[in-house]
Length: 451
Image (cartoon, rainbow, N blue to C red; front, side, top):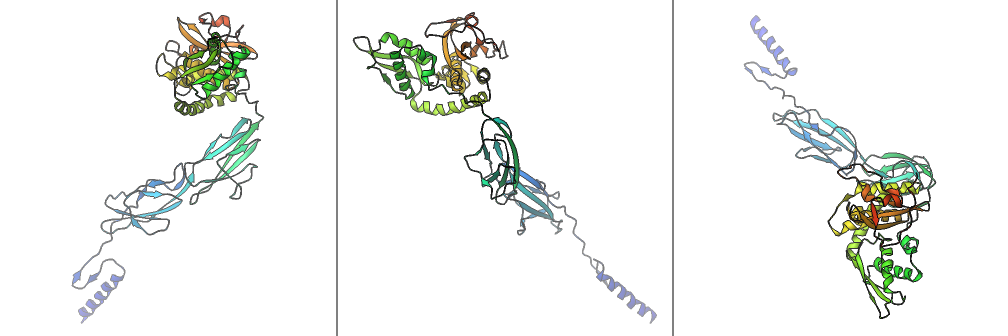
């Protein structure tokens, strides 16, 4: 009896252990179920954080240290799905991920939180400026709105809404901007501007031929022919009718070269001219050759003006004519490579300004274009230098004329530094190694410029 009671007691104790252990034991047999091995949680290619973007989204790649594990993810509280390709994040997002091993083990859930903020381009940036400025705002992210204030107060969606016209600043201000995109985080930006009284805007002399030197050397009837040629070339006309002006054909050479050396903007103008006349020798019409068609000229003009605007913007910051001329001289040299042969444009202003390649003629016409645009009276001068045909410029500063040879100031292989050997010099200085061909009347340059 004693042995029997002990056996029953032992069986009770062992059976009670089944409620506290993962191993079940029964009398007469033994079976076991083991826990699955631990699985590492997935890692994301982007950590949690705030991301400033210039486009509307980014992708997150998930990976697990257990290469055989399956990855599942949930975006913004949605249902979990099997991961097969990078997850695209288009708005602020909460990404939850976990891994499952082949034997059924599941990792802990890991959470990544992403805040998206648009990158913003502001032009011009904060700083001190001479004269009113128009500030433009832009972002590569679509759907962005900008709200702003100019009095230093924090902007809200009730503040002024930015439009494509930009923000005109006429006085000192603190520009504060609220950047908003639906589903993204807000952004506040502050830019401080100091607006000084603007220097007088230089007068653009390009189209005012009555203010140009060559025109001033002509008589009354010669000026009328000049004006007719100007309008014809401006409109790409085949010829200029001058039959009513009674000007002798012998005067045309002087008139034409005064016109040509005054007006660099007509880069489509070819070399030379032809004319018709009556039995009395009076001119009837003047025809000019064109190196580019009207359509080609119009297309190039847009590039020409945009490229020149870069140099003119730099020159406009200068308060003195001398500084403006120096900026244009240096800008043109830094942009242009000398070419002794090549396409037709190397002899015209667009060769240097648009294409960065020019002969001396192209350098000179480009410089004249820039200088006249900046309000500096300028002409082209033709002659010879180093035994070959050559062209350079004369400019008028402070009521006096000076020579400038941008081509010869440009660095070359044997002299790799920019120099100012021919910058604002006198007749005496330039004629020491240059000569004139006498094709057009020139003003006198009695002395070198004294800074």
